[in-house]
Image (cartoon, rainbow, N blue to C red; front, top):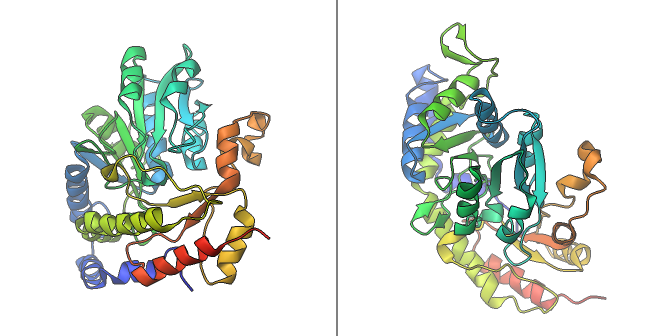
Length: 368
């Protein structure tokens, strides 16, 4: 079986260092808000290229805290609007609605699967306060046009960088391009923990301090609570593991790129639409998405031949039951992507033989 993502092998590839890091924390007797957290936050901020990184419980929390902090600081208020791509994972939308804000969905480009900059401006209203871009599948979503729109309308630019650790726009890492960015370290991410974990990066000290307080019950000083916060903290074991894996992130991403380049070069089946890669540095291939009208047949065929695949994502956010008030909306490009997308095996531990087997099977696929 060729696994979609073999987390056991991914972890084992840095196993000695990870075991040493975990044992160090266990033997220290200090498990929250300690030196490991401080070290990882410092190193992660330096890697991303921001002044601050604030660890938190998970990627959804990271996005939630950014918006919540802006509300606490008076930059936004419940009822304000946040522009967001229609084809994102639901966490991007949940972070908006859980703060009483209104998501305004904008179609992506069918070429890149990223939010279409040409469609953003028409979605802006007097209530618009931010644009949330999502570096979906590991590809940079930022463009100069998006930056210009934010400056023109005085909008905050928030990055959902959950899938794009190590991705670049020019010489800058995603996660440093906007006013703040949310990161997920879910185990399957390019930079993955051994459980749930997340972080916010920003250059805004006031925002960083507010988020750190909100995620610590709303407290800036022990037993003194400025905000009605929650408990959403990055624990010491996850911080130590992430610091180990951060040192190997670029190397692991390079392995992903080599897998992707082999897929792009050698998959020749006319029934398959390959992703468009505009800049090698601007994609870290968290996901390798292909599209086909025959997705279900292809997935079944690959499964029967020992290849695991996944779908990102079968149902778009505006068609989910929890957002039934949006079910009537129509986003044809988004719906096409969600109906046709299939994710091929992608990880830094795939062997060349395994990749070749996947390619051979896809090239041999025929519609019955």
